[in-house]
Image (spheres, rainbow, N blue to C red):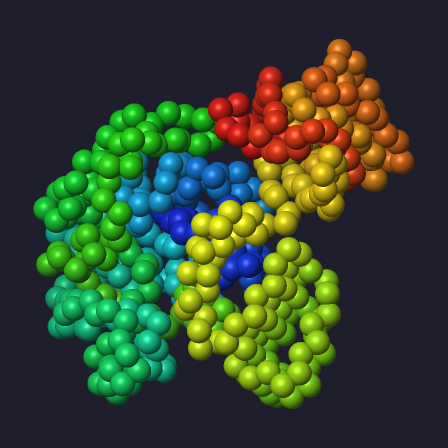
Length: 499
């Protein structure tokens, strides 16, 4: 019996979506994959660590929104990994265009590339088990017995999660006949009989009882050439837009910006609808890897540790006659709750959510309503991340604004000036190197300086510890777009961003 060595897998981390269903913790400019949902590391970094074994995986390829590029870069830095490419989408167009772009890039480097398309916001408790499944799936995707030809003979493999409850929040896969071929049999791969939409509770119970259905994980292993061949047949408009967007792309530091108008022409469609439901090459491998799609607050409640009354608590809380609820205080405040059952209570520095768990699916619509009303709480978190560090607005009123600025070691803000405001800086801790006009000087803890309106200025942290500054702005207009950027280490001269 021939033994086929699994090809090295190219992990493609798909970091799209706005995460509105997990508002107020997740927001448009800081979606759930970057938030600390579970304690420890964000989901994005956990996803990177699952594909960090250089003996199995090639360097990851990341597809993300333009707005999130520095969040992605920081997560890669924290994980100690370098991406083979970070592809920037000018707008979200769902997973099929992103998968097409990734396959095109991978094929430029390896005509036999095999991709693992992995959402950045899923939880997998058993990472080593998933790595083994990915290896077995890669052999099936490359073509059982035909390794190396890349574009022919392979299947488009997805993972079906073995269900353990009648779940109505997931799509399902009906499992067909087992695939022939030594590697396919060894992997437990079967034909996909059908992809099924999210069922009602009675239908979900029937699916569970039949044993013929698996949860659709949204993870795929595909030969890059095979995927593009299937796209040529089933969604040529997606592929054409992807090719045009890549042809017009331009490099920006460590990123590759896709051409905006070409990418916008791509149909907004998932890989499931565009390819997997139409191809005759779809295969599924059952998986039991501790998988969870943490797409809404009830999902977080389900995986969290609970007290004897079924309550999941993050932060400080005093509970009286509270049952089966999720309570979270990320702002340091105490939650005092009385007589609640099946509720969600989430308190952040600038917003408070209170909702029944049974209506959690409506929270995304609530966040969209707040966005339409112009509420900044719907789109931006209290702490705004920047490539050099972060800032937080502490107080704002007519004529003044107070910020807390944290500059990471070696972080440098842009050289800039303002038309309508002056600034006062007080160093709380760390050491600052200040450029003020033509002068450059050091500023230590408990020291301050004044930046007059219209004067060019810059902050740099030359030390090894974070630099913490309190900034007081005074002026007739204090909007974040009152900035003229003269030089920027991070290539942001064409974007309107603070600092």
